Image (cartoon, rainbow, N blue to C red; front, side):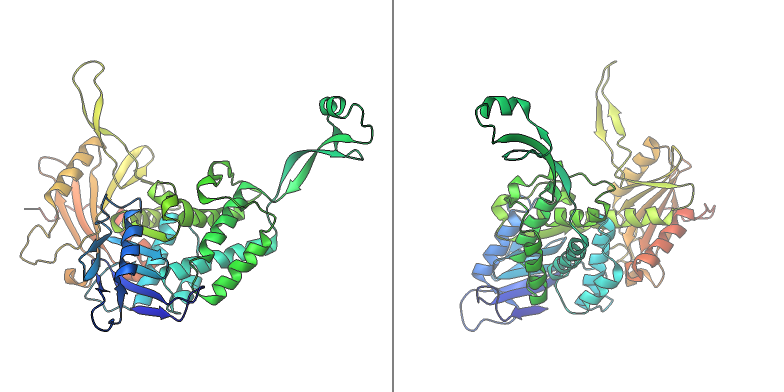
Length: 455
């Protein structure tokens, strides 16, 4: 999918292209006429540089983008890489056998991000914007601008700040020390100390920085207009460079609770909180919103699993447990090899289920009796069963049509034990509601005595 915008802010053509995981886009090297849906070598180099600067990247960035001279190849990440004059959007490759438009896949990706990051975007707005053929970056910037503008029009959050000022009339209380040292011979000047209700607070400084940052990357004229209006509203808020933003000073409480999801969106754009790293100031000319699909799939399932058990006696813990496999010999031997199961489903203090998610296709080869399940993954689940004293374990994969019309449910008994391992698939095409129903069924499924035995 290609979008050649007429002009960006300074009149230069803009190239926006879309690929799926493992997809590729051609690079024009200056020989003959430039084909459509290709980047120039200069644009490709800018995207490769932005990819290498991202926290998910290895030293050469080849786990995000691979340069093959005449083409660049996306890896198992999704999101968007934007550099001056160009961008590459990477969408998930869910099921190649199902024909879906980029708009449908993009909408599903934004829904996954919404659940995984707790952004509270609203499905209706996502679907409406996806139908307008906007890129992922366009959609997220527009959602941020719309919601921030709505909150700003309701009124900016403010806080009282102590001020010291020399005035001709008393305001607040007199600063005795300053009055009798600095103004001992100036009875016409009073050293006043008072509280002023101000909107120049850490939260709004971050919002203003985010608006200014996104204005450089917004393509749609209407989005640009809204961001410009926001800059006008923030005229009295201090300007700070990205690397000096006061993240640690922000406090979300009952007085500014309605700004929480906006604050999370600002983190997504500026701080990359989800990847557990701060913004890289060296990459400030571009924007990279990238997510490893393994991590995104895990967080998405965990978020919907919490909804699936809501109102019952079960609870869900993501990336919990943290128990160790080994302990060194000796009375004070250190523990080694800590474990972090993807999802723990607990009943009180007991672990009822352990779910480990895997973003890969299984069962593609009908002659493979192990269904393509990795032996190391099975060993890992057996270790979890022992460490967490859990008898119900699930390896969960995305569903695809090669597995059949219905999601996969294959049960195995761990030999010489009572534990049961299930290999299951999750049909993401059914949307959030359908995924919740599948997870509810998976978690509540009773044990059966005649389940399959693995080979």
